[in-house]
Image 1 (cartoon, one colour):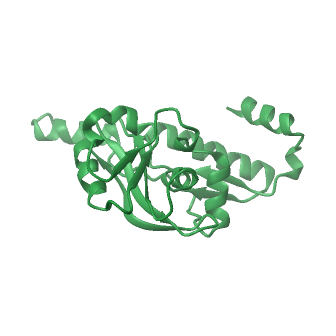
Image 2 (tube, rainbow, N blue to C red; image 1 turned 120 degrees about the vertical axis):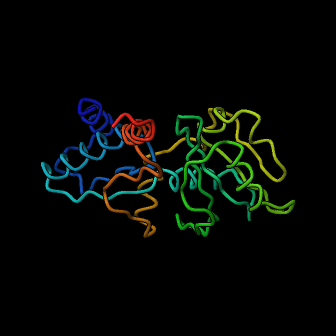
Length: 198
């Protein structure tokens, strides 16, 4: 990962001493990936003596959706949460990177996500859903007032520039992981306890 950071800086002609801050996506996401990403950002921030700011991955994805959604649409980022679930939320864009939260981040089965999101839509104001969760959900997201971005659409990817836009628009979060559900290890521990496995 650090080689990729050096390569990125070299490709745009920016030296390490020119960095003013580091912005890192804080999730929601998987336990291990978030911990590694945030720990790397914090380590770089400490080594370079620059502040580290967090931003929601779902909010950043919503900003990408806002670029292709019709005016007044509800923006619903959907990420693959594994375990047959999606990380979803819903927002309305208020311009210049500002978002109004309509549905807070959560992990839902695709059918439950469709129900929750469809309730936010109307014929005049559809819910635009994008992200890698769309392909995972398959036909479960076929519901009234839901418009799905095709898989692989650029607006359906979390982009670093959108994480920065969220921070600049006042959407900064602490650089700590947001999981939106229990880690796999805790789920397995509770399952074992319930089965009498101590």
